[in-house]
Length: 263
Image (cartoon, rainbow, N blue to C red; front, side, top):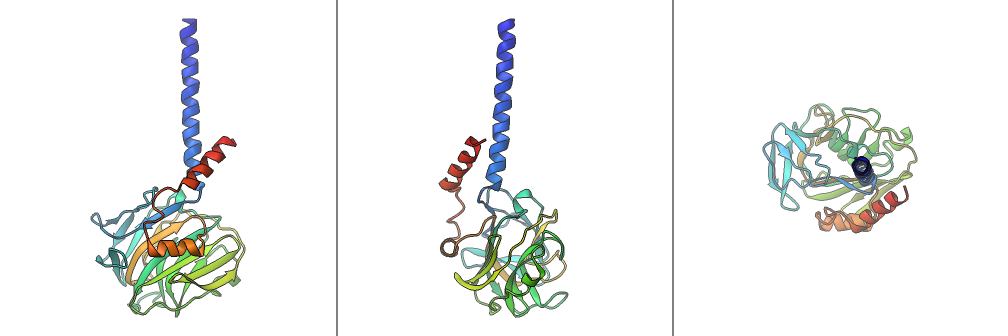
């Protein structure tokens, strides 16, 4: 009986260690350099656009959206009053660095509230802490913007106008010190902007602000978020091959295991 009790204790300790290792590994993977959202829009399941990243951040579509021919496969067309909504998830709470990117084919705004802006993607229900947004069209240009960064950063990095009913690749990055905006793989605007981002618990919206204004009138394709800033070469790789980053990279696994071993 003494040996049985000892074996049970050893087995219990092993199980606890495995659980702790699993939790630690999962946490480290979530905070490693990750692709946290990829909506290809190649197909829909009812009113849901599935996320191809490992985090399952699927978008529920509201209003009259439809699949159309995209830059790669199919794209999702918004009618100027429709949008997608993604439930809040820790993977979308960006604090250290970010890349937001998509292909856009924009028509003139359809009118209504905030019609001087067409929001491609935005985290939050309005202008509040934790908001980050990539506006496909922003008062004659395009813009990556963050509520939490200093006020003089907010409207000073407006890039080129892509509202011309042709496909353009728009991407924005922030590395903790600098906002960069790219159009069709080329750096278009750059602005030094140091600060700290504070997560919010709001949904992430596709094609609108908060589901009630700043609607996209046009099509979006291959929409992605990374929780770190891509280099220009990496952005070009994604622009030319949107599926290039969907497989977990070996260097990320190596980094994760190194972090675990250091504990």
